[in-house]
Amino acid sequence: MHLFSEFSAPLYVIHRLIICCIFLCQNWFCKAQNSDDSVVWRVGLTQAFQKFNQFSSARIQVEKNKNIFAINLGFSAQKASQQLFAPSFSVDYAQFWKMKRIFLGPVICLSVDTHVLGTRFLYLHSSTGYRIAVGEKWQFFQEATIGPSMESFTYVNQKNQQFTWNYHVKLGLQYAIR
Image (cartoon, rainbow, N blue to C red; front, side, top):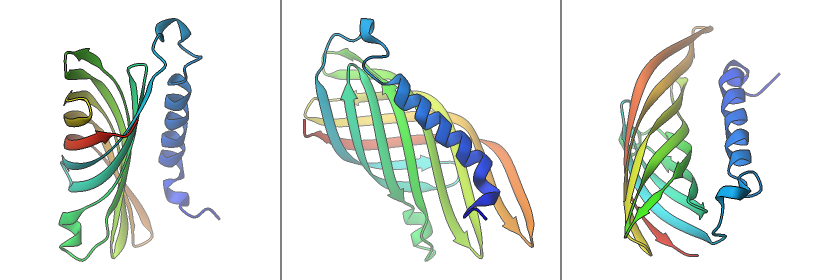
């Protein structure tokens, strides 16, 4: 018996998308487009607002050849005020174009968040949008995305799933540790 068998299909899809994103971000895959080999690591904090909740997150980001891959791990302060622990995990990929000290480009985000309120609620989100960032060493960024979302829970031995549209607005500050 699987640990989360009722969520296995959506988690399988997210797992495959992450593997595809990692594969596509490899230097050897797009050799002709990659001329700069510098790698920049950034750490930071974000505040994300979405249709269902808001999250405070710690963030780690790696930049190479204008490709940006970031992981956010957070919790919901809104749910914590209701004495619930609601973790959030998101992975995003962006590509930036630099104009002096301003960076602008598209972003793709996959995220999952959950909480238990008598029953376990699981939310899976995928979205696309833009990110704008200002600064070099210290960088402030704003991101806005929209995309489909799935809410899943089991109540009285009956599995329930709902699909809806979701939006994300994220504000963050990060520091380059190189």
